[in-house]
Image 1: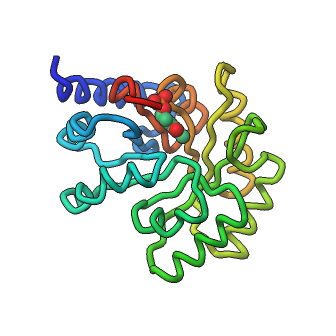
Image 2: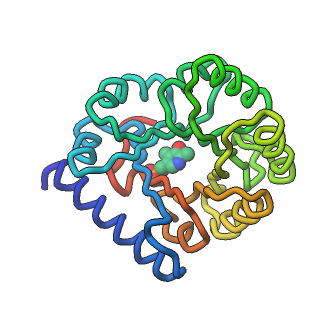
Length: 226
Ligand SMILES: *Cc1c(COP(=O)(O)O)cnc(C)c1O
């Protein structure tokens, strides 16, 4: 099977599984957005997804995202690009220019840089706050018990367009309790969007309320490099 046919088939499979999981949870499939994670994937695979009509993608590195998407942006005006990798303050200008959604806001200093750049440029990507649900020291994301304060600061003091929360549960552990925790924090803060679920666990995430699922290898196959 060609690369293009494979990607097309996998997109169909993943969409069907999302719809089934939504049905199990008595949710409307329309309330769940599939984000195709294109990091470290060959352009041919990404173009296959575009040819299939898919328009929502995510990247983890600014540099890679620029190379891939700057021109494709012009070719596909309805494209929606999400930033899901750690964001350094010195990359905020490029991130605000390139992305429609930034999912990895996790500290006040970054929030302040984002506000400044949004004011300066007039571009206002929606933001999600990343929560380090497993309290893993090596991972980015705000600690769960500090999340409410950061939401308040970002949304109420800095007036950032905070739409929801994002998480990456610890590797090798049953993810459901972490998805449930993210949902609890979102609900008590009145946030609608829940970005959770990757190739291995997006159905569980949908059943626990995910509105954005981030799927890479299950759509595109194994990545090249890291
Ligand atoms: C790579 C990545 C994904 C996609 O992972 P897969 O297991 O390939 O689906 C999702 N979210 C984040 C933050 C990632 O870095």
